[in-house]
Image 1: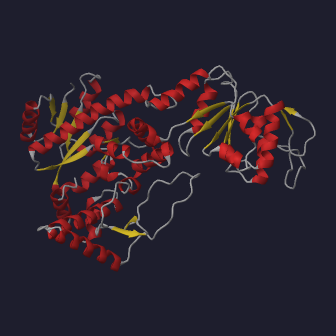
Image 2: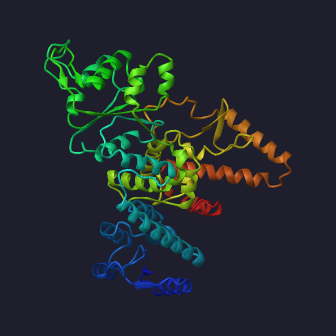
Image 3: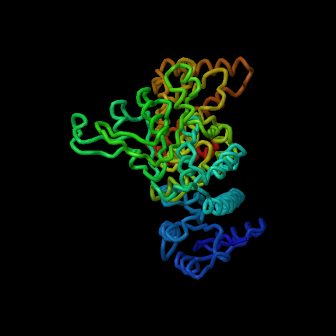
Amino acid sequence: MKPIWIVDDDQSIRFVLEKALMREDLPTRSFTNAREVLSALEAANDEDGPQILVSDIRMPGGSGLDLLTKVKEKHPGLPVIIMTAFSDLDSAVSAFQGGAFEYLPKPFDLPKAVELIRRAVEESQREEVAEERMAAAPEMLGQAPAMQDVFRAIGRLSQSNVTVMITGESGSGKELVARALHKHSPRANGPFVAINTAAIPKDLLESELFGHERGAFTGAQTMRRGRFEQAEGGTLFLDEIGDMPFDLQTRLLRVLSDGHFYRVGGHNAIKANVRVIAATHQDLEQRVKEGVFREDLFHRLNVIRLRLPALRERREDVPMLARHFLQQSAKQLGVEPKRISDAAIERLMSFAFPGNVRQLENICHWLTVMAPAQLIEPKDLPPEVLESAPSAALPSALGEARVGGAAVPSVPVAAPAAPATEAPAEVFPATPTLAGWESALEAEAQHLLAAGHHDVWDQLTKRFESKLILTALQNTRGRRIEAAQKLGIGRNTITRKIQELGLE
C-alpha cells in the first residue's frame, strides 16, 4: 500500500500521527514544509507516491492551501486532509473550495484523526477502482440483467437496417439506445439525426421532417432540407412518436412504405435512404385502440421492439451511473470531481427515480454544484431524495409542513429540474405559516409526552438546532462562519454545536 504523507513543521504532530498510523498498519512518510513535498511528488512514480496527503495550513516556506492548489493541479484525484487550528476555520472553508477531502481541527482527538485518515484511504482506493472502470466505460452503462438484454439486442441488430421501436419511460435513455444502434450498424459512417415530434408545433413539424420549397408558405424565403434529407445514408431517430399528429402519420407511413417523400410545396418525389428508429413512452397499442395512432403505421414501426427498463428496475446500476455522472458534471464545470459515500449511494438506490436516468444525471449535476464538501454524504442529497423516505405518522415540527398530505420543506432549496417531458408537479407554498409551524411543534410534543418520553425537551431542542444549522449551512454552501453570522451566533458556538449534534 502507498504511504500517507504527513506535512507539518511541528515535530510532535508528525511523531504522534506516525505512531498512531503505524499501529493501524498504515505506512507513512513525513515532511517539514511544502517545498519538500512538491520535490518528492516530482520524483515519485505511481507506486511510491502518496495514498493520502495530510498537511498543516501554517508552515514556513509556503502554506498548506498553496500546497493544496499545486497538488490538485497535477494530482486531482489525490485526497488531501488539511490540519488547522480553530482560529483558522476561514481557511478550512477555503480548503474545501480548493478541493480538500476534509479538514482536521487542532488540537485533534487522535482516534478521530486516524478514523478520518482511514476513511480517506478507503475512499481513495474505491475511487481508483471506479476511475479504472470509468476509463473503460462504453457509451451506455448497465450491469443489471435487464440492461444486458438490451445490449445483447443491440449486438444482434448490429448488421441490420431493420426499423426499431424503443419503448420506455421518460428519461430512461431511449436516445442513447438509438445512437448505439446507429453506431454499431452498417450506417455508422452516415449522419444520426434526432427529432422530438412532441417538442415541435404541429404546423412546423411537417416542414421539419420533409423540408419545404421556396414560397411554399409565408416566410419560406428559401428552400429548406428536412430531417429525412439531412439523415440521408444514416439514421433518423423519431422520439415521442406517439405524439405525432394523425395527418403527418399518413405521410410518414408513405415514406416507410415506398421510400419516397415530397417537400412541403414540392412536386418532385425525393428518394429516402434512411433507417428509421422510433421511440415512445406511451402505450401505442392503446393509442391505436383510441383511434389517435394509425394501426398500419404502428405495424410498420414495430418490426423490432426494444423495451428499456426503468431505473428502479435496475437499482444495481445506480452506483456506477452516479459516479459516471459526477465525473461528467465535474468535467463540464471545470471543477474537481466529488466522491460519494456508500451511505449516500444506498439512499439513492432506495429512491424511486420517477425521472429515471435523466433525473439521476440532474441530481449528480446538482450535487456537483451544491454539496458543501468533496465527499457527498446522505445529508447532502437534494430534498426530492431525502423526503422520499416513508414519513412518520405525525408531521415533523422541525422544518416541515403538510399541505394536502404532502410534505413541504420550510426553506426553498434549489433542486434538479424534472425531465421536460413529464407533467409538472403540483406546487405548494414553500413556507408554512407561523401558526402552522407552532401547531406542528405542539402536536409533536404531545405525541412524545403521550408516549411516555422523559427527554422531550432534549429531543426537540436537538432536532430544532440541527434543522436550523443544516438549513443555514445549505444556504451558505457549507461556509460555517457565514452561517453563524446569519443565525446570529458565534463561530465557536456553531462549531461546538456541529460536534455535539453529530453534524460533521
